[in-house]
Image (cartoon, rainbow, N blue to C red; front, side, top):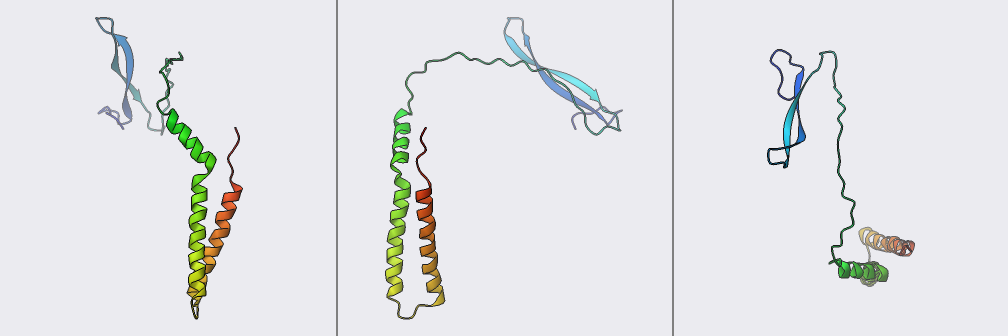
Length: 138
């Protein structure tokens, strides 16, 4: 609650701001206080407020976009699909090294077989994501 009245514990002071002009003619914001008394049987209060909003819709020429080169580079990286191809290359190297390691084991255990199974299964997921996504045409 806000600052309440000593005699009525259900009263609340709400502060709002109003735009006024001072002696020099400049617009200033001043605070107004509204005191609302809420009866004990009501749990919540509502108040309708009218809001004035000024929106500047004029077009401003701010010159060339300073981020144009960065945006162009981001579009090029997206078009060339550098990161998916890099991830697949790293995965192929990882798969190759894991398979060579596994084939050199004399008696592989269940844990080692599980590791190879996970690495090969992850490859199917990687390939599915790579082929399932493509550059969207605008």
